[in-house]
Image (cartoon, rainbow, N blue to C red; front, side, top):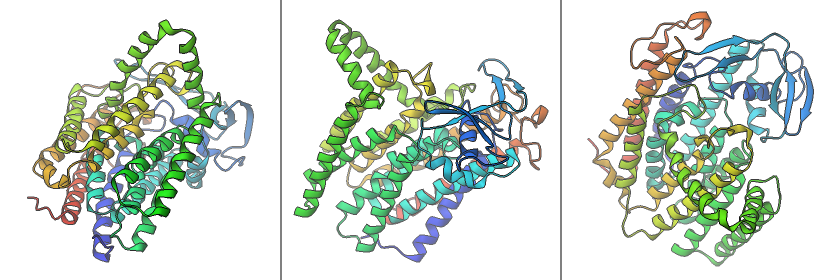
Length: 491
């Protein structure tokens, strides 16, 4: 039984202090507007509290779920071709920029809007740092409250997702950072609160509260989270009822949850603008055009592996090409963690992964066939990232009983690979956004034309080294903390 102690609380604070420092340093590594949609999110944050003088003085027009607003910054437009230097031309003053007017929920923007100050660069940096702090606090409380087996699943998932996409996403102003955590990891708290009856009552209540916070984070940042959360709740509910002795009241609650979830899914499917509604329309089309079923199904299945692109790319930066070694290393880390966590006797590993693959295929079909301005040219791995996180977490939790003991013999290798992958990624990003080209690992100068933070007292190379050190310290301290709660000796 895992009980909450002051000593363990201090250990987890130190562990996720390193994570917070890493994310804060990564937030410094790219200048404002580095990602293709950062100015959209910035405008939405500036207007997160509604009309405000200086920051968001006027809404020019609202076109559906997108608004045109005036803010106190001018957008820098970049001609971003990955194989050529970036060419960025500042726009004229007093131009309008696009902002959220319903395309996303407003909670994420509302929270980050509290740190907006007259300086645009400082405001954007503060918003990134605030998100990094909030993410670290959420993950820290989750790790502290979870019992040993659930902690191991959470730690191993962080090993997979943080080296590339996770580190940039969680230190950005992109709302998908909340969706990734709330959807992909928040269910662990609810699962532990229900299934771990030996935990103290207060700890189980705290876990349930963290689960509620996770749902609020997900739904408050992305409408896409709703069908994902419903799918996860149904799958987790069935697993709990089928494999655990539960009281009649809890069984009734889970059955009601299943019925409500199924009902909401069906209701969503009848609504045209919703993701499942669009999918329903698409299925009706297939019913009328049966000859298209084979080709479209084959096209959808071919896109499923694109979900793994998040292991070796930064989906929010289309102008960035990472070395192929990064993708190979990311996939190798993923493969090692999944292989070491495989349990041939676990039926729920196979059922869960198959269900996730089917649901993921349906979402890819929907995104491919329905116009989505967020990803007009390709299936963006960013929007399937929460399901990838859920898949890895599910696989680990449904794995062998001695999960962490099995993985421990390979942990030093996996942590070494993760750290090297992180280092390659950060150097390439800094290189791209200082001298505007990518040549590989080398010392990089301060960027011309204030391309990097002009008032930064240290060079970007030092920031990369610090970020890598903080990342390595986080992994080492988290490994020791999880090992102690799983009664595993690690060298």
